[in-house]
Length: 248
Length: 168
Image (cartoon, rainbow over all chains, first blue to last red):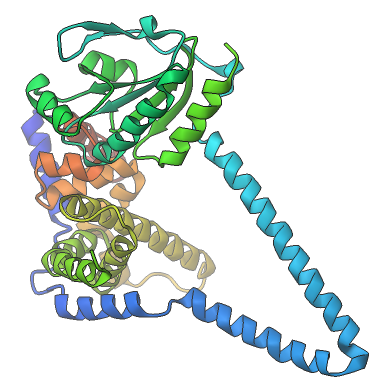
C-alpha cells in the first residue's frame, strides 16, 4: 500500500475534497445576530410551559365557577399535584443512586489495581501496594491538560478533609518533560498530596489514553470506581464516602 | 465579574472564532447554510457553560463543532435512506442524482460516517489545519500519541474507502 507518507498524501487529498466552495464565506455578522437573538430569547421550553399553564387555567376556572363541577375540578387538581410530587420523588431517587452508580463497582466485583512504583519529587519511590489499608484516589493528569487543572482544587480539599479517615490522593503526572514541567506547577497550585512522575508503561497499564482519568482504590487495593474525563466533584465525593465506610 | 462582561467576552470569542468553526462544520455537511446554523448552536452551548472560557474555549469549540457536524451528517443520511425506502419503486434516480452520489465528497463523507467517530474527528480537524498540540487539547489526547492516533485513523479510513470503492 506504499509508504507512510504516500498514505498521508492520499488521505490528505481525499479529505481536501471536503473543502467548502471558495466563494462561500461564513457571515459572522448574521451569525452573531442569530446568536444574540437565540441567547436572549425566552426559549421554547419557557414559552411552551406558559401556554400549557394558560390552557389549564382557562379550562379549570369555569369548572371551579360552577358548584356542580367544582368537586370534579378539585379532584383533578389534587390528582395532578400528587402525581407530580410522586414523579419528582422518583427523579430525585434515581439521581442520587445514579451519582454513585457511575463507574462504581460493588466490593464483590472489584479487580486489583495494577501495582507500580514511581518516584515523587524528592526522588523517593512510592509503591501503590504500600498504601494498602487506605482508600486512594489515583488521578492521572498532566500540566497541559486544562480539565485536569479544574479537578486539582477538589483533590486538595479531599486530601485535607478525609486524610484522618485513612484516605489519600496520589497524582500520576503523564507530562513528557517530567519534573521540569510538574514541579513548578504543583508548587504554584499548592498541591498538598503526593505526586509521582508516570511513564508510558503505567499509562498503558491503566489504559490512560485520555486525561484526566481517575480511579478510587479501596483499602484492599481493588479498584472501586473508574472516572474517565472531567467529572463532577459530587461524583468523587459520594464514592469516596461510600468506600471509606465499607468494611475492610 | 458581571454578566455583561462575560457576554462581551463571549461575543469577542464569537467574532474571532465563528468563521473557523462554521468552516469545520461545513466540511462535514452538504449544506453550508445548515453548517452556519449549527455553528451558532455550538456557541450557544458555550454560552450556557460556566467553566469553559478563555484559552480552553477554542479547543472545546472545535471538539463540539466537529461532533455536531458528524451527528448532523448521520441524521441527514438516515433521513435520506428513509426517504429512499419510502420512494421505493416510485421513480428511478435521475442521472444528476447518480452523478452527485458518485462525487468524491460523498464518498469521503460516507467513509467518515462509517469509521469510529474519534478517527473521523481527528482526520477532519487535522485537514482543517490544526496542529498536533491543538488536536491534543481539542480531543483530550496526549500530544505524544497524536501521531500514532492519526496514523491509525488514516489506516482505518483508507481500509473503509477501499472496501467500498476499490483501489483508487
